[in-house]
Length: 103
Picture 1 (cartoon, rainbow, N blue to C red):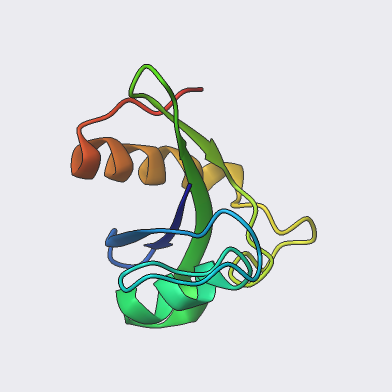
Picture 2: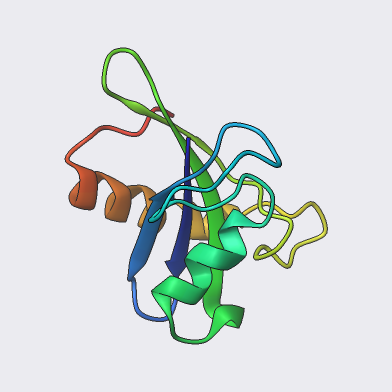
């Protein structure tokens, strides 16, 4: 999968591949499965308080599934990206990757 961070104040986004299992070796340019959103947030730069974290999973048909959970970035009671922020993130992902995000 891929760990992503979206800056709600600028519309900028950063996505990096993440390891499959916690504790796996982390290749250059990748982030660990545990704590990866915080790493991607640092690469994105800006004010981390404006960042939302999400995870992308590539499907066999080339589309992307998205998981809105991030224990390190999403400061909501359930650690999910707020519903109101999701359309902008989906638009940014589709524009940057050229791939459709599944509903």
